[in-house]
Image (cartoon, rainbow, N blue to C red; front, side, top):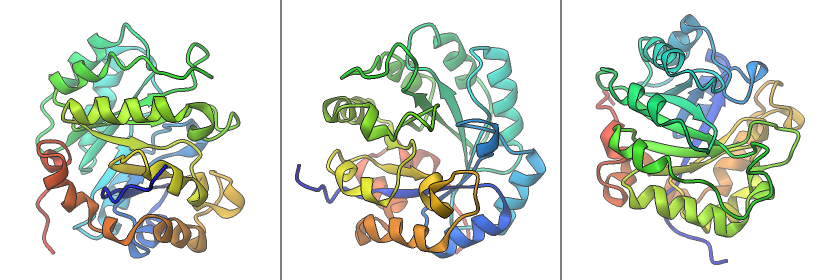
Length: 264
């Protein structure tokens, strides 16, 4: 496939202030606070998230995960409200890409979170979806209606392979087209490393997210490795350095809706 020149933001998942500062200094567009030892979307304590936000330059958006999905709307709403209070710009909420989750989406959409925006993360490697050439994307419409800013694909079982190994190119493209067509920004994550970037750029996502691919020996629970961060930054085209800003024109009302105004 021919590589796209569509601007793409580099999201780096970090566990502490020093990792956040390092990744921001090396060109990450979004710093994502996450506890990889607690699951694919493991949540950090609120005080750690606040410290990461304080350590990262004001112009760099910070997101935070709330933990792996439980299917409980009350639990998801409480966790999202709590994490929003930690000062982040984006709260990431996980879902299995299957039916029956509209009530959770509705409850989250009803929260009053000020400038904080919600982003859904669809964990694609549920047993019912593994190996399929397509995903159940029926949740994207309700996500738009609930005011979510974006939706990303990720993997729950990091031993099962990277996202491009679990889903076909057709499924990845359908996801991007459906999300962007609904006015949401579309992102990929899931055991990604620098070598996956050229393949994934062809689908014109808005965000590529990394954790293990930024760590020593690719171990997601290890410390961030500066060389690995630099490799990812080099792999994503230079026109994507300001991709968050660029997406104001590419996807009006999506990334532009949550991008906060911060002092330079």
